Length: 127
Image (cartoon, rainbow, N blue to C red; front, side, top):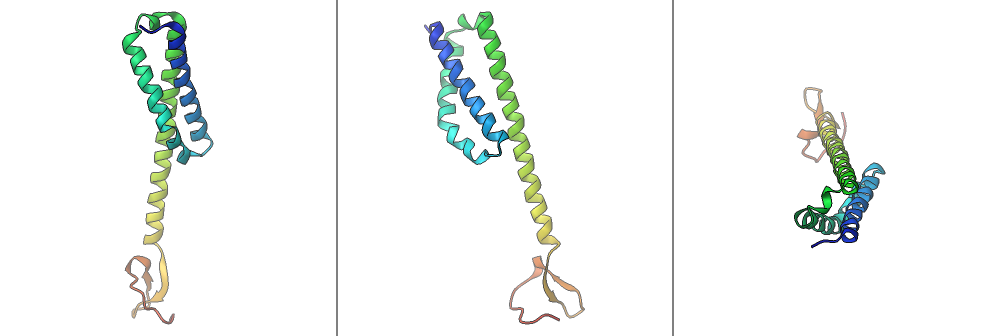
């Protein structure tokens, strides 16, 4: 059986991890989110256990409010993760277009520039 202080401690851990994750996402330090992975897994496992074993505690109004806050924070972080993912996909897409539209500075026999994607090297002089 889980007692109230233990349940509050578990919820505090989850809130803390979600808050740290949000801070890293909003401050552009997405690469550091992985550092929270182990702590987040431990907090979420304890939280899952709490949800299974202490359902009676979670019916209290103060726990209900904290649960709503945790759900809200997790949903917001998910939105931030999706924004980061969309940003990275946009960058990759733009970089792909840049290489398609780039030229090596050499010219073909018909006078057209050689596209970067068709470059094979061994260019000794420009036209």
